[in-house]
Length: 444
Ligand code: FCB
Image (cartoon, rainbow, N blue to C red; front, side):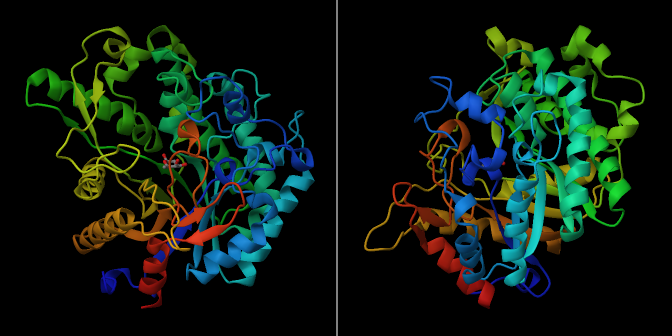
């Protein structure tokens, strides 16, 4: 790609790169930080592919000035990051000022380079001391307290704030499939967690707005396209169920709509945990919605076991499909299909693509990283964004995931999503070909 589509010109369209606290910061016990559920999860044998953890990660906590310099050098004017709740509060839930100070240092560095911060309050690193985590309704109220603390201490410097990142992952990967912290495996409980997360979102929006009425507030979701494996009616029905869980389970509450019957059935007796009045709290007016898009899923009718509870099972994409290193299908058209699917069903606010990117594990050779697959992946997705805007979608910005290689959750350090390579032994950063491509495109 030689030049950007004029619709994506940095003069009118926001270009950024994204990270999250647990994945890059390291310094997991510094300055009073308390453990998060990901610290405890990583300590359990067998949970993380390479037995990795967040103790050191990219050492961003100690290298913040250098990393922001890198963002500036690459030509980004916008940076999406998350604030670590377990740095901001102590085990008695009171304020930990040393944690706030770290984010002040980050914001100072961004200011210096005129980079606009785009903060997320919760990107999965839940304080471990919150009894019951997302299965406990109380956690939603603690989230509101935390949101209020951030609003009071950092809010005047944060123009745009998302409450949660991908609550689907916290709820279903964390409480049904068991592959993310805290590792639960109950269908009904995952739906309870989903509800409490959305309640936390609503309470957090209210708490923040009581302090700063003018911040642009929203949420980041990962809605999905679930295509049926075949056109057999049972596979079509299974794919529909997967989509209800992934999309309607989160978008409905945001717009004050009840869950579909299928989800109400699956929560079963635990449905009493959803109380009268909760929906109205979830449905706070949104200033924006962030969408994260990587791939699509292919679903098929369950054969039995735990899949039967869910009503579907995912099938791995098969050759000749093109896959990224993590095994996700490269399917750029899916971005257009997801956005159009959402537009047809919900009254969406302005959209930002808050994450998009590829795992491409190409290493360093002669001081360079030739991540051609990632370059192709990104270009193909930029085209979809331009196409969407041209067909009327209100998309205001695009953030590449990720600024640099980092801790990829259950995959540990085995999957590299960065446009900047990180040598985890030396912490040396090397911009990859994709970073240089973006730098050139953003310069125009
Ligand atoms: C998203 C997460 C992000 C990163 C990418 C690859 O689901 O939000 O933290 O791990 O996937």
